[in-house]
Image (tube, rainbow, N blue to C red; front, side, top):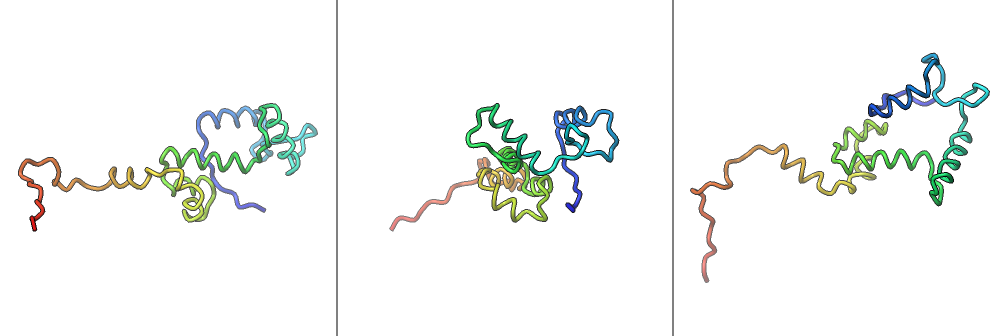
Length: 135
């Protein structure tokens, strides 16, 4: 059995899942077959293949690719690795950094610049640049 966890949804995502579960009990599965039973793994795969076919995505992708795309999108928008790790269910940031940090090459520099205090050493007329000695 999978460990339950909290996944943050956007307002759009909340509306989507609310529409899927309208009129259902909170204990019912989100994705149901026509006969009212829960989806199995093959049902997810079949639906993804159908969606990829309709969208012209070749080769077809898996649900896991959508999860990776979600993490990649967050990384490319400079979301902190700890937040991405939490959203994806990683125990710590090691796996997140391994797979997503390269997508945010400016992440380190932007984070340092945003959080490092001013030292008062730049743009002051009293500061004179050091000159190299002539040999």
